[in-house]
Length: 416
Image 1 (cartoon, one colour):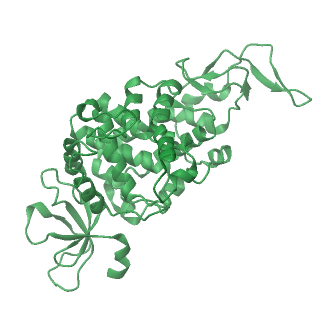
Image 2 (cartoon, one colour; image 1 turned 30 degrees about the vertical axis):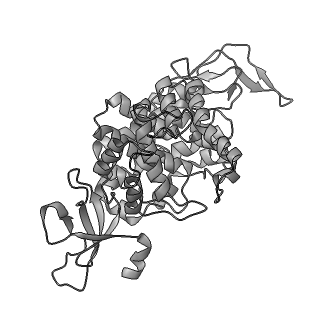
Image 3 (cartoon, one colour; image 1 turned 90 degrees about the horizontal axis):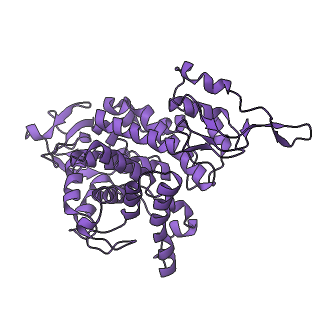
């Protein structure tokens, strides 16, 4: 089904489908998820003629039965089957088309077994899958749906409001091959948690989350050889790379028609506290607080993500790198908020205790960032009084156990 003019959402302002774009099953499923009961167009229904050419019906746009019955369909699981989406767009390796079940299957046992995270696996997986589709449409210069960003932003806000530790537990548990969609969702989770901790109004937190989801979309316009280059970029290559912030900002305001404030946040996420950033060389309080937050979240997520030219850092190493900044790139107050929310050993980190047992951090303690709550995953055989597998220890409230070092997940096989 196609129409001779653009199809708009029910607000009659934002485009749902471009002129002549076929309405497919997954489009209808998306409308159902977004609780949109009808769409609007000034065009006419295009029909195939005997010579296989398209012609417009003389009669006015008829009611679309599937759209009329949207409100009656309430048992459809969000993104339950993405085969239609996968077939719709061929996305390159930088994006990696992700099925919902693939996101879930690649999560480690720690997530599946950790109740606060287990309760929101579906929300996290759906967020990654929807952003994958969104970035794919941008990359292929196809119709862009602002409602995807709005929906995912609301989903992430609900996740971090309900159980921030559960939401943050996904951050360190990367799939083997990460993608722009994972990075966007993970940065948005970190940014949202920091925004709440800093006491930003809900509207500002939502803007921060939305900007975090979109802050690197301009990177899709940067040549792949620059993105994957392991050596230092030339001056020309770096200038080309820097353009991604302005491109993303223009897309946010001119195409998605999101508030200019959100576009400004996206544009400023590479400004530095000392004024040595880009694109405008802003410094200190000249930089929006949300941009400062996203800058930290983006840097942390980049360090713990595996790149084509280097391996990933463990969470504790990435935190140390941020602490070494000393007010150059990042606002010290924002770094402080990051440490208070993420901890010196972020949620999901593996740590070795003084009795040689290995534990996973399950909750950060705001006023004691070195003393998180942990769950024993490998008990030590050296000491009969050691904590048992499955025990949860609140390090702040006792002196029997304490952390002696962070553990790289690669060491686990050697320790078992």
